[in-house]
Amino acid sequence: MTEALLRIEQLTLRYPRSGGMLPWQKQWNTAVDQVSLEIMPGETLGLVGESGCGKSSLGRAILQLHRPQSGAVWYRAQNLCEKSDRQLRPLRRQLQIVFQDPYESLNPRHSISDILEEPLIIHRYGDSAKRQQRIEQLLDIVSLPSSARFKYPHEFSGGQRQRIGIARAIALNPEFIVCDEAVSALDVSVQAQILNLLMDIQAELNLTLLFISHDLAVVEHVSDRIAVMNSGRIVELNDTEELMRSPNDPYTQKLLAAIPRLS
Image (tube, rainbow, N blue to C red; front, side):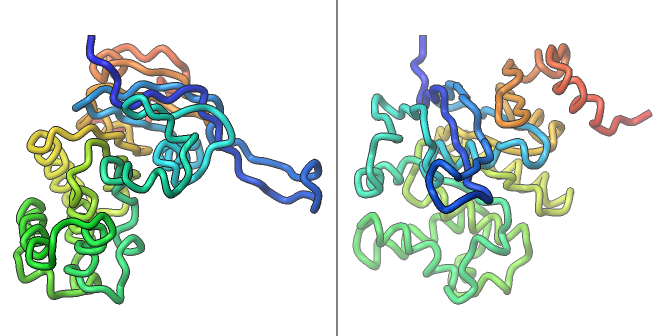
């Protein structure tokens, strides 16, 4: 039996809200509540639920962008939750994210070349010539012309910016990518292009994806399995075909009933 690439055990993430100055007076909102999951090599696990249910918080807690209060995230026999930021740094080559908003996730003062070169410099990828060669390769993978590297984010459409975000995420040849509502800010026609691009890149690079979305129809299109999240908890997890055909949890049934259908 194939071993999981990532194993999440009883992960809990809380955010402080209004309260007193002293530690015991603080009040907390629980975004992720004792979530356990396994993500298998090469699969796309869809994570679906309404806005505010904790989907993005879970994705970021897995990557340790937000530090969970308890639980474990095992990646290749290493518990990411026990590692310092410095110890995590070499592992970040393998664990990347595509953010939701292509307008906010790219530095408007940096050229596309600078944006794509930054992770290569941080992780000491070759010399300047080799990095420029890699940048051209990345732009080709996401179907943007080589000349794009001289431009700035404001010169691109939303779909093109998200292609640049994807190029940045795959720059270091990662194993695992969190796609955090990666198409929700885009027009429907552009969404389809980005979804097809992600699936092509996944097949070419043998990536493992956690695909987060509030849209069950989108998740169905790209996922091998689907986890349904409600109020910080996973309420259902099943193969995509089985879950869409026969959902067990009432919340999943509600999401499925909300998908527009042709009459």
